[in-house]
Picture 1 (cartoon, rainbow, N blue to C red):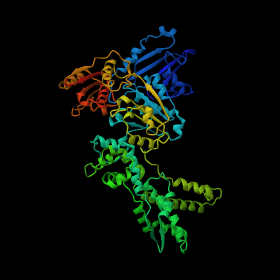
Picture 2: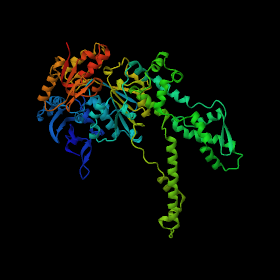
Picture 3: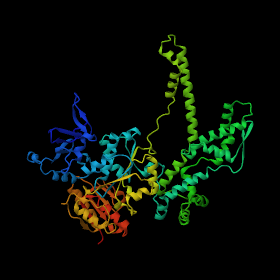
Picture 4: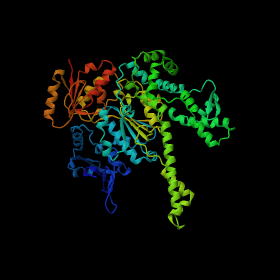
Length: 635
């Protein structure tokens, strides 16, 4: 634990006692508490105290660290009688100075600067879905990440469920940008991923070029079509099927098939259900073979291994491939029309008119994910047989070991003689037969899921998240005004439409990132299109004016800024071909979401579109700037 682990201290008005707050708790050799963990109830006043509600504090000091040294601090005095004893009266200016510090390619550590409204959200209950609604720069991402760390530490319910937490990021640059925050808070087990990376396909998919096709594929109706398409391959045989099992015969009827299917766990994926279905069919077919002279275990083994039963399964419950099923749906008119009962005729024709051969795009990722969920592992039967063989061999090996130990035990009090007890033998065998631990998976289930930039998620993408979080414990972070494809309803209405009803909403209204000058220019873009937008109030009012220039001046302006600033980052938004560098990112408005830069150059924003979509893209691009905004337009 380095010195930067200390965030500061608070002093209580009644006792004068100082309590230091840190990233973790610290005690001396005698057990005296030197520093309390920021997530404990005892530390809450450090973040929550305000001049309106002091929580019994007389003052609070926050440290700012740089290279393992305190580079600054600011005091907040809640007891007016102590004002003259503190030399750092301008605590507000110190805090503002920290907000204006240069950015780096990684999100900076802001734990010590968390404000009371943010802290209240961080410490709120994990039950149900919490929506954190806030405009640009209000600290939504900071709140979400620190909330994940807090819940893992403090929430007993999450810990009792295994404590797995997933953070869903909007794009790769965001994942990289925030990657240090949770490890710096002592949480290394939180998984951060985009929805695309959650679904490992083994190939890069092209973007969907047709907006209408993209809308169709993102709908809940497509999920229903996939489910119905899988059920097509689970229909019972139309006529009786005679099976040759060794020297005997048995008949599989449609009713016997349906009875066997009824014995399967309905939640088992299609491919994996073949194992249960095979066993159920054997159970139902055995009475037809009861007149044979073979013993039942032998009959059961013969039936399970029979090629006739395997052929029956392959015909009426075949092994499916998730990707091929999706392609078959797009290329087989009869299958799509039958399965897509919730799609309109125009939507079906639109999907069928796609170029051949059928190629999946990024819009198919949620559908591929759902297809995998419905179908399961193609190799499940082989894996099951291999696992059964491993268990059988391991059981035989341990049985032999136990027999040898028992035979060699002369002294009946000897440890080996204890192996004669059946219960101990079973315990030894059960421990030796445990299945190896599976590697970390994005499939879940997760105790809690944090979703950033949630305003942009489609129905199909939401389904990906809900399947991974059956408890419904969600932190949903977003801003309706930054929804590129529009967000005309309320959060309550949007979430209710996808089946999320246990909702609470917290709103952040203070902008800690951009200056008032930047926000004034950005607000002029969004408010005419969305008067109800939650445009936050900037805390910093003394920023540089927004600069306007011709696009041909881009390189000159950027080079001058880089020469004058040895630290800090810049972003060029709207000019994909411009060369990026270590301190200069080149982004689209969509891939700039969640990020911030000291200097932002927005290139030809008039080309972002004249509709509401264009206004949102300009608003997003402009609000990435912390200090300087340059608009490069033809006029």
